Image (cartoon, rainbow, N blue to C red):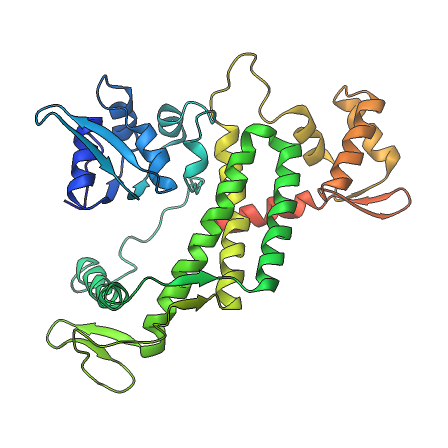
Length: 348
């Protein structure tokens, strides 16, 4: 059973996952379905979620058969939608690491009525997604019939990767503190996984695999009907990431890290409860796009921040590249550009 219901006991969820050779999908349109399961006496399998993210062995005891079971290298994918309060119910805080294992995308509500008849289709989306699924299934069969592949970034990509995430970590350490560091580091792993997925999809692109329900899989450029045992695209054991796929993964993370920060800021805080957003972050976003020392001291005064404290803020912001020192006593608030990027992402 590939699809695992979120409304489950921990043993039930693990048993279904184990029966599917450690592969499973959880798809829920209401995030509190999983939250309620986690709060029940026998339904908290949050630890299994956390282990599955890194493909760590999940162990459980099957009482009926008096059997100890290990699920080695589990692969569990989960898609949830819900409101901010449903997220808070599922993940009350970031301490246990569950928050950092999710990708978040926050969508603002727009008070605009959309034309619900704008898209005209004969068969709805079911046939469309079924055709996509069949195409990917052909790629899956090609990949599974060969030996495992090794995925590699080039030396230049590795350098870019380390520089990119080093800068992001330094930036958000100043804004959100240590609790957010796990999210940055796991987004690094997520970016690597996205690059792997893009690279695997290139195999399908090279042979232009399409699927027709009457004739099965075929090459759209030649019309050749593909046999079950055919090899398509680059199926060598070493897979090098193309630069366009690598840059695409970093571009995605650049947006996702802002959305994760937004959701992180709305999590319930343990006592003593700090202000969200904190004073340091409020000061940063209160600064205009261009300013000098006199201006940032004026802003600090309106927020009752001592001059000595704000001098330290400015020094940290410059070091973290949140603001740019253009010349002596001339600064540019580059963080405002990030806010605009986030708004643009939400408008897409």
